[in-house]
Amino acid sequence: MLDETDLRLLAALQRNAHLTAQDLGGILNLSPSQAGRRRQRLETEGYIQGYTARLDPVRLGLTVQGFIQVQLSTHGPEQSASFARLIRTRGEITSAWTLTGEADYLLRFYCADLPALNRLIHEVLLPHPAVARVQSQIVMDQLKRDAPLPT
Image 1: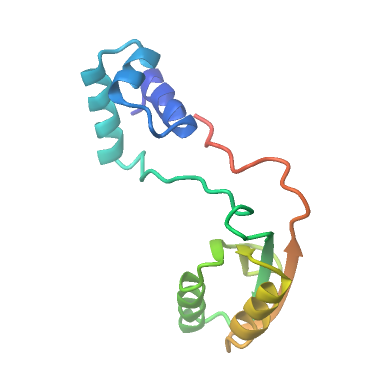
Image 2 (image 1 turned 45 degrees about the vertical axis):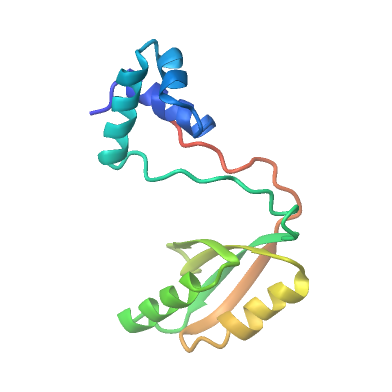
């Protein structure tokens, strides 16, 4: 069970994963060793799955962000597993979800330019034997960055 202090610790780490035990102790009104033990317990129990750096895609030359909806023609376990393997190999696909509704998958991508997106769609996704239809949406402006989870 998570108590209020655990929730405050998780919220603080989502805002800044670089916080030291000393920093966390100050925020949570705990000693640094108590704050460090709490963080370690939350890591061990799987509440904290890892730490990453948020990069600026535009500065990295990834100027086209968007989503691709994929509809499969067949839904057998082999086809689904094969498609999942394909999308895991593609660095430009940064997130993927299975869905209810008309589309079977929603893929988030970052590409350098429109020709790179065209290659992703026409040379990678559409040739997969289980893919029936692909529909892409290009992000014009991102109004809210990926936000921390509510705690």
